[in-house]
Image 1 (cartoon, rainbow, N blue to C red):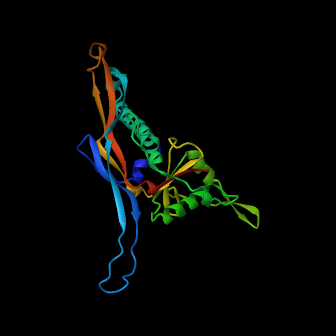
Image 2: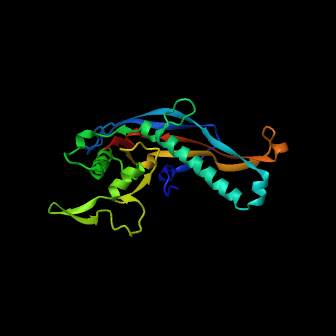
Image 3: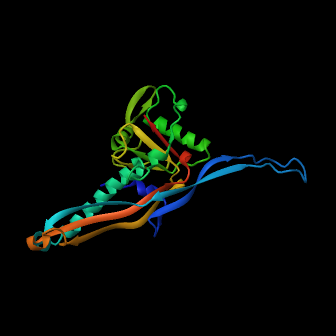
Length: 258
């Protein structure tokens, strides 16, 4: 089970509506300058916005289980609740990252993100170098990187990078010894891994510039009110949540490939 989820990188707010409206920044032309003289006209900047709306989406699934099994195994209910909620979180990661915004899908961070500027690449760059370049791209836009999302295999490859001295591999892991206990991070920026990310791609962003809105946090309910479950001593165990995502500034997120 993943230690750090995509939602853990994002601000989270409750909503009581079936859609969230917000103001999205388009272009900011900063003309701020020193005043030429007393009484002179001040420089005029420009800032444009678009009012956008994100509908709340439902993520849910269920499984059948016999009443006898539920009654006879005390820990089964708790186990099923944990597994079903984890299943929701897996699909939630996928929606928050790569949802395409069509049909009943959330418009995810990758869909909303700005493309990585490959002009920053230097010959011989490794994965970790391109992530550093994406930091620069964010800084040049006035943003601060607060999170990274990678496929587990790409993070694994970074963990296995070994230090070199004078062109010789020292055998020491660049990210620290295997027995070191530390939260996944690069330059102090937390790293979340998800199989929802395509292997060989990365997302780096100022995650404060987006938000998850929870209409209904994950709940697990059990009932025999389904088909002929009552007479068959079967139960339906359902896990469900309702949420949406808003991205306030697209240039706060960089999506690219290694």
